[in-house]
Image 1 (cartoon, rainbow, N blue to C red):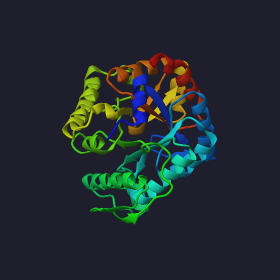
Image 2: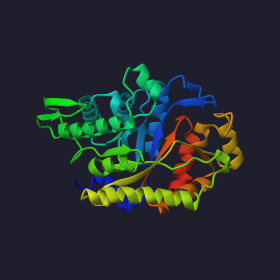
Image 3: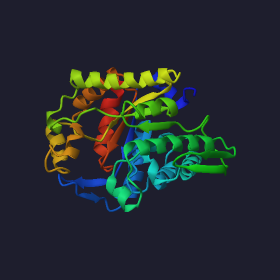
Amino acid sequence: MARHPWVAQADDGPRFGIQVATHKRRTAQLEVTLHDDPLMVQMAAGRLIEELGYDGLFLHDHPGFSPDPWLGLAALAAVTERVTLGSVVFCVPYRHPVYLARLATDVDNLSRGRLMVGLGIGWAVPEFVNMEIPFTKASVRQAGLAEAVEIIKGLWTGEHYSFKGTHYTVDGMQLAPRPIQSPRPPIMIAGGGERTTLRQVALYADASNFGDLAAPESTFERDFSGSAASTEAMRARMDVLNGHCEAVGRPHEEVLKTHFVSWLMMAPTEAEARAKFDTYFETDRSPFARGVLAGTPEQIATYYRARIEAGMQYFVIQMLDGADHETLELFAREVMPGLR
């Protein structure tokens, strides 16, 4: 497996992508209210993200409370020209790999070769239950993901392809047309599990994806630079990935190290950042609230500078309210230039 061109851009410095969602409010009790027109929120955010110079524009895959990502990506492909499109990440058990390969091929063609395919095993039990998809133990879902990657890559060759596995079977399927990208769209596998997931990244993927290894007790008691212990833990996780690459005979530079933040929220001052946070959360100590990265441009720059120094190369920033254009603009204009 050669180094994918999208990965090779890491030689030019860190890059930043935005994952857009459409939540208007999330309380401590996890009640969610969507904007009246979430697809239009996504479209407006997508145009702005491209205009501001971000590298990536991603949607998440949660059918219970978010528009379908493949539908959204197809629409975004039509209203953008440069930005990388994808999801961090598509849940493999939700769709047969043949159907995933078909959708990915179509979006890559619609976008003229701008798709990145992020894959994961899923975690939202209610979604599995309501779609009557068995929520099997992690090792079973991981094995299914491995088979799915093999099938997707096989179908992307454009040749007649067959596969017989434990979870999926394909018999002489040919996918036409092929994706535009050469050699194919890049694949990301998300998760930081040291024994299985990172080994799968080394075997099959062009990019890994995980975030900080522990959330702070409170959003507003965060050490933005990261403690020495957490930074070392992040480096250690990447060392494990590099070790898996060595074990399978693959240069570790072929794998892009990407970092995920569950919700970025910015304002010009600390008081304004706190006021913005309070419009979404009743307390800063609930599990979801603790994952929020909220602060001023200077504080947020400190946070990302520490992760770059730890070895992260690409940053996926989730915006759970795509209508928060202030955050998108502050990060692009006051944070990104100082990190490149």
